[in-house]
Length: 261
Image (cartoon, rainbow, N blue to C red):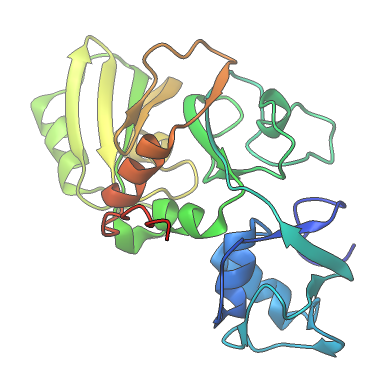
């Protein structure tokens, strides 16, 4: 399969009760990929509506439009969100070409899950997996500013007040200055950092910029969710109430249950 891989070789999912939405959003709702990744699939000519290859992500479609990706038809599938306490040595991808264990392999589900954002292979802690591409975008796009809390063990372990303030204000990185962060030292050599952005290896690079090396890094919270009660290497499916709290953390209005006629 060329280009960006979709998340399964099985029949792709479409959202139930979705009518008249843009094609990219339709694919994201279906759990095919995030909204941005779905737009790339469309631009690459891998998406058809009926017998027509469509390259316009704004094309309106519904569940009866006959949307396919790489020739695979779309069928309804319930959306799921799981929380995993990632152990070290596990990569944050759906599959790995080098045969390393993946976060998807640690979650028991029949759905085509993929990780929401990334944690380095050496990092541990809370990572979410879902087949809801729209939710994944809400939780990872910088414009929504969903907070992630990390606990870093650093060397040397003594951080001055000036160093802590520099981290709070933002430090210069090779891809631009980091945004303002909440930073507090919780124990000698252990610092808690709260960020609203999530660039590659950002926490490690921030500490390197102020002369400290991260020797252990754990994500302890993602928006309103924490690690309490979730053992290392274990996962659990989130409740509807927890998913609603995640959406609200991204600024999405509260969803009201639909009334049955």
